[in-house]
Image (cartoon, rainbow, N blue to C red; front, side, top):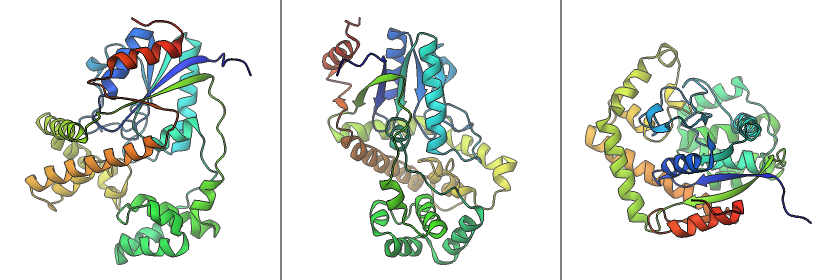
Length: 321
């Protein structure tokens, strides 16, 4: 088989707060690239400070795609993301640019690069019934039900992960088939018109990442994160929603804890600690997923710069300076 003649693209992956955004902007400038965000929080308008969304000034004229494409009360599936991202990549290549895929949402990367299983479409009536049961019995009880009908799925879903428990039970009730069985039937996506170099950016020491997470969250608070959440809570569409705290946008890490704090569930000190802890847990899950990406190359952004430069140069077949 001959060499892959497709045009190149770079995927900059990694846990939250690892420095992906800065690195993506740097490589986009150096390589004449455009950035495709692979982040499930950045798709939502109004989630700016708490999602670490790069500002217009920080973007520095570099084109960004799949940022601010949905309102916070709207759904946006991984399948929709994959379709939109594929279209964005094709457009970048047509303009002679380099696609830079940057983010930490593993499901989005999987949908784009590997494909998703065919699934029954959402059913509002079934979903509402599950939500009503959760309100009466609690999500841990529904997680126990999921463990009975689909132990493989339950083993991968936390007892407090309402969104994923609801979807897994919904699929089972609609189809009579476990969601884990549907997931085993994943279909390959349409082949991207480019070859992708996967770079994982992550500090080698976990303590360094934890310090970055805490420092960044404190900076978010100083920048007005809680005021941002108050503005979201005041939106008529969210005020009218029966359970805004169950929307994917509101369940984003940081926003979920801020929402609960503004509901009076936690004092300020506890809110900060809970948000930082939840962000650390997110980073842990992201790292676990990234370790399964066997064709990805790992780099510590503080110490592995020469190796990173060499890897990109080798992939592109030319020295980058």
